[in-house]
Image (tube, rainbow, N blue to C red; front, side, top):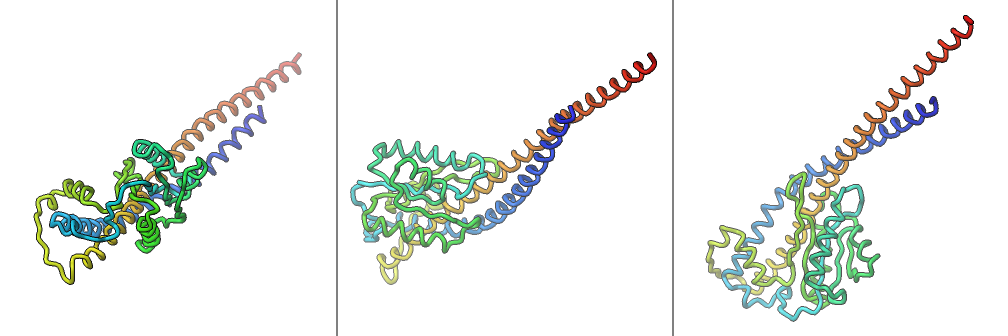
Length: 299
């Protein structure tokens, strides 16, 4: 019985130590979530302005005569999917959810594996597709907890270069969109080419933009204006997706660590009950043995 009590006590101490770790990790994840939410709120103002400008240009038909490399209308022979996951674990179902929904989206659009490639942002996604023999044409690991815009420039530059070199003919960004602290929603957005169909869809979802019919006089020229605006638009899409995905990752990590801490509390309560019962049984046995010894002496 003494050994059983010792084992229970050891499990209680071990669970308490684990709980301290998960509680600390929950606090860290919560701090990261609060920080990135403030950053994301400010960035949304910028990205909404960039998208509005591009949508207005589309409605003004300036994009119709554009010769920008990002608007190539060549036939689609190869599709690329930029899948955003985390580099680490302990983020709950975040990675499995992204990969499951991304695979479903990919299979519906391009069932033949030879017709697509993966561009992975995050080590989990890169390793996942490599282990399954999928063509991972590009991977980027080590995204900051609160990504800065300069980090994305390298990704966008590589992606647009691959597109211009006809390594692929269209690109979709797949990630988990942050809804609130307890839920996220999978998104797959077309990034390249920047075509009028995609912009029209975006404009239809934007009431102020949808109501605007604009005419522009451009200086120095339409081509030069678009050469500046469209790359910024592409950068804003990728950076916004990574920022959004990272926010969802921190929220998932916070929830996972909170759940682990709550489970540890429940386990400690259960083990403490077992310990008390075992201790009471041991004391009862000792009293019984003492009483039996006394009765034996009387006889």
